[in-house]
Length: 350
Image (cartoon, rainbow, N blue to C red; front, side, top):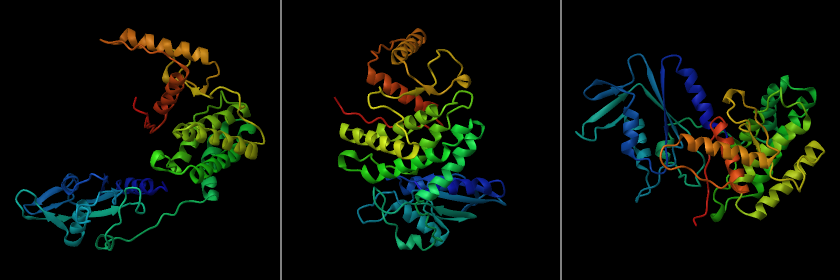
């Protein structure tokens, strides 16, 4: 969560404009040496019977992300990493079918990993010795505020002066919420998904960037958008009422501290935003706005169900939209409209 992958990929993209062919591999606990060898050999060309290499005049750079993720075998080694070590030691590996040695030419290896723990394993020194090591420390609050304030202030340049003035307070509030949640809500065996990192903070800012200067012209609008996006990123991950109450109290304190006001009242219904309330409106004309009328929300969602059933072939979808179902639907719609929006639905069997 400190930007290792983003930095590596951005560098490789710049290098790819020259004589470099970038190849990105992602390791997991189940990555095998067989699969690793197949992925390495994939972009290479056969030069001789016993030689593989990058296309003539080119260099292949293989970037392995999460290189220390493969699980340990019975003897405490990681087969995929041992294959990479063999390649670095001897510039090649064996053909798995005919058992002859294959030399690998014009291939450079780069890797990224996080410290051991949480499914990651220590790397053998025999492998690490081949690399120049760079440590990317976790940025502090001041650095985070500077980075995200630059992004948000640039985005709000066309908004009203009152909203532009809220750029730094909103970023500071986002960082404050992230730091408090990460320090208080720690993962446990029954809450193993309570893992918060910089991606969550960036998602908060990304959510605020969905505002449009033609529609958002009041401070209260942008602050409620901030509250909603922060709630979606952090609150939706919480699994019990105690944690949810703690988060609401935390948000209330943060808003009073950074905005000198209460953004959302205690007795308000769930704050929801969406861009689908005008049925049939083209996607590029939709406005991401607060959904204040929950009865209208139910009517609109029922219209979508009717529209779907009118086009569905075979079994129709018959849903009863109670309050929780509507809120979850709005949350999922937000994920689907977001860039790189991904969702993990955690449910209890029953």
